[in-house]
Image (tube, rainbow, N blue to C red; front, side, top):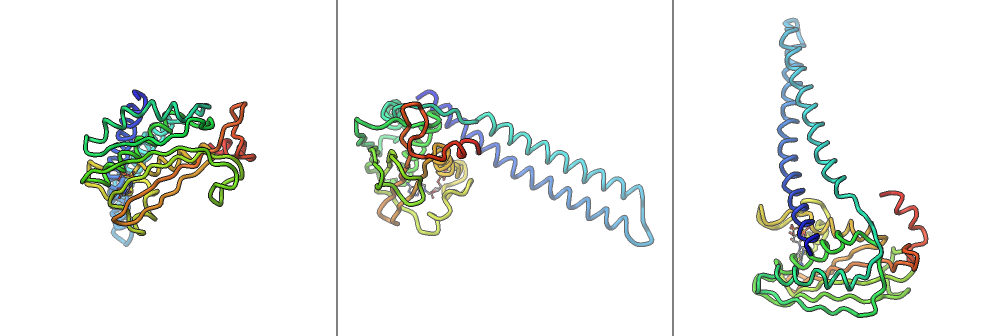
Length: 261
Ligand code: ADP
């Protein structure tokens, strides 16, 4: 719970940081372009002015150097969040965030847990997993301004019950369903883009669903969104069952997938 809160603060900080960086970066690019433009003018034609030319080139170089320093900041921040996968019981993790989720519903939305009690273990970064579920529940709350129910389901899905595109095997299916505003097809197609949000500035970072999807893929699974405008949304996570030795029983080529991270 503490960790999930801490993680969501970090995520918000990342959003703010990234938003600020995008803005600063644009200003620096404008400075680079502007000075190159001036340098070009100072350097062409018979009236070349070496001093002015040198100054504009110096300014452009300085601005570009500051741009590099900015991206370094963003990279080192995201490296801090490197994933640490472990094998754990998803039911325990879901129960650990229940209080936090209920408190996040602002009293207006009820949360219902429908979790099977024989859930297979999964292999993932537990903090990221908990944060993903908190994010999904908060999105569900935001989709129901008039109130309603959020249903969190978790069940084992044996081979043959998983979507196309996943390696064959056993998966856990975890879903968050609301009866909220839903998404248009145009919105649904963009929600995995980082920083895509339809919320007011300061209310949405647009990082929730990209993070949810990245967590699922890092664990060897995937996520899917079903939504009907005006009726509601279900976001489903498919996560491979962890083998007895902590490996992922579902994904035979998981060694490669982990090597990419
Ligand atoms: P944020 O919530 O900060 O906007 P997300 O990446 O979590 O970022 O979501 C992106 C967008 O997807 C939201 O702004 C909203 O338009 C849409 N969305 C996400 N979850 C839901 C949901 N449960 N119902 C309707 N729309 C949703």
